Length: 365
Image (cartoon, rainbow, N blue to C red; front, side, top):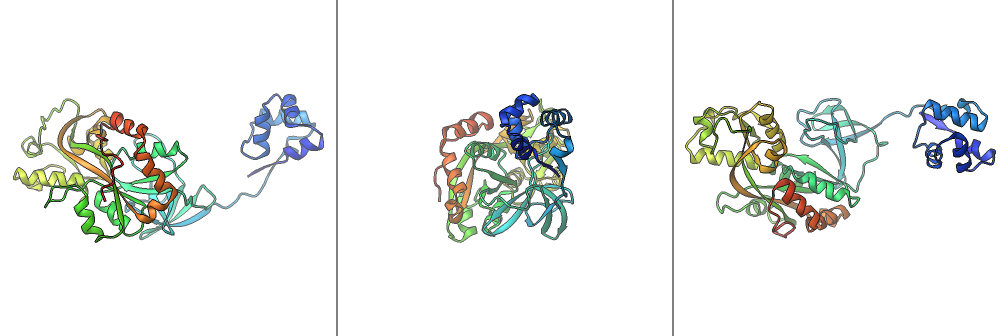
């Protein structure tokens, strides 16, 4: 770790930051940044500073002892296959430190708070890049809607940070019930009534203090390769056209839609190629189609748009966000609720994701 003595040397010579900046040929902001330790100059600038102060570079900068990396203990969510060295985000939920493996991304390194050092059952040790502290103001949101990233962006512009963890609707609700996340997103159809989310959540939480608000209404359907070369027009075509599907895990709304369609067409899961191949989310499933590992998957139209794939609509579904009352009392929880009613977010959901936002932000429970 490099320590700087620039401020003391400058002051003993009676120089202002502007004076030293002028002599060294740098900006005043650069001088301040070096002095507060937020900027480490290159060799040329270091030599210019030494010349301006008539000292050796070693008198301006010195090597201190390296601080040991901070290690956090956290409960791991949705990371059954997580391994040592994997990147994670860290949040505080109802007094628990929770780690979330970074979401599937095909191109760039995601933002992270540290890496997994070791793993024992559901607990991990994390080498932290943030000095061992956990940002208690973050909101942890679980669900499968790809457009949660748009909500993330909208809140970031307001200075509020949320962390999203991709999982099935049922798992999101389980984590909310267990106090492991602040908010759970779901799109589950009740077989008895045909309604989305409300009947299921009332049974699941047994009339506990849960509030639910609409996020958006989307089309879910078959995401297929460009040109739809296998001529997949319905779930009934999966077996007849020998199409390979990338499936989702049990408890996901997409899996429910597929299984419901197979029953309607009298097709057994064994007749569908790839039925047992599981993707961890809508984007991962659509990516499998995009790179040729499957002919199709069931996902929202937004996932097809992201990868330039064709889309065959099957169902109109409602994706809702469920909160505990404690989550709604948090500053970030209130900010999320306010964001749902902002015109900017609604326009993004309409334009980028292709969602219906007529009821976005509406209280359902």
